Length: 472
Ligand code: GLU
Image 1: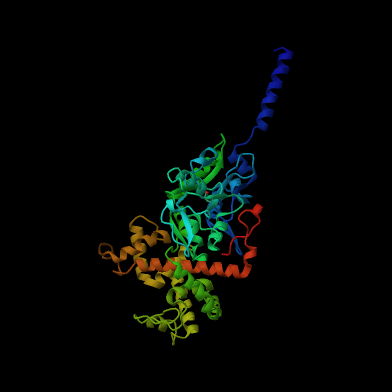
Image 2 (image 1 turned 135 degrees about the vertical axis):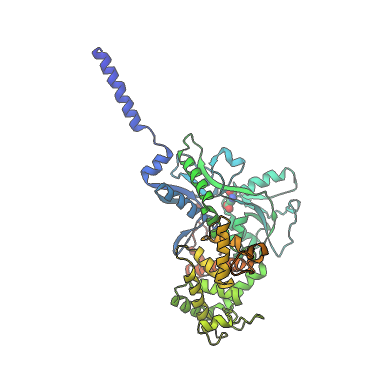
């Protein structure tokens, strides 16, 4: 090789190595290298919220599990406004959007959606002081607003092609929660919310109702920026498939959205009323009893509400009585001499609940352990065990409340209960019981965190709007 050729050759070799050094790493490699997954979200009860023990919410937990599966940390960033969630590109800091985004035809050209992890419907919300609109053709009020850029606005545009009289306004410097609050304050007649969102906020807005579903079920998914590089996206798809098949996703859905949807206007108002009139004088008793048995006083108070609506004189025809509605036998076991004495009843109930919790096998983790203990408080440990055995026989997980609650109602059917040790039981009751206690517990948590923080300190949905969330 001539000298000139040799120089040329070594020049190209070094160029090759140099360029490979500067080759861009894939989206997955850069997450691993930086040791951190950056997720764009928005503050909402369905996505990400903060309370005194830190962040919580469905998207927060789901994305955190994904980061764990990659072995990296997680950091959340918050969109300045709703539109920004839809404008994610590879040039930005965030790796993907986890914000309860609906997969819509319009968004598919903008973002790369993963397979969905749950479904919602869009619901028209109105105040119960006005006449309920019965169909789309009745949505002609000038005070019908939805969030610009939302799937709700996109759906209305589609629906309006067959309903030319339909009229609405789209607002961009707002949030769906603020629109809901405006309907509550009679500043709007209607707005649209996702069904899971309304489920979570209905107890704070007992005067609002669902008029009807205005969309078919809509898929909710994570959104990645459009790119040729699918390495991180593929990992997310793999992760979502895995948690779908091992039941973790179902559990997460149950944890965040699985409690009672049944409470109506009267139920919510009555609870709030009782929280003002009856709870204050019992709160100290709940707290002391809960401390003694290492329980959360709000859980104990929620059980008491389910049992007696915090009425110390409650008596049922079946002979149970008092705030915790103890049977004669349980009261005796718990050394309760007067079931109508609130102090004794609450202490007895707390002690009994703590014995139920201790009876649940240690390997069962929270919150499943507490839900199962509550079911056994209601129906008895033996029947709960029967339901768990049926759950296992059916190939489901007897240590997971989501699976056990599907099998408890079978205890009322002969072909099932004849196979069990303890026989017939009204197995639907503990399911409703647990769901109601969870709902009351959530409402108490909300009331308590409002009391502690004051509504001004709640985080804003979008930092740029710098407005507060409506009263929760
Ligand atoms: N699922 C709705 C959407 O993707 C959420 C809108 C919202 O609550 O802000 O547009």
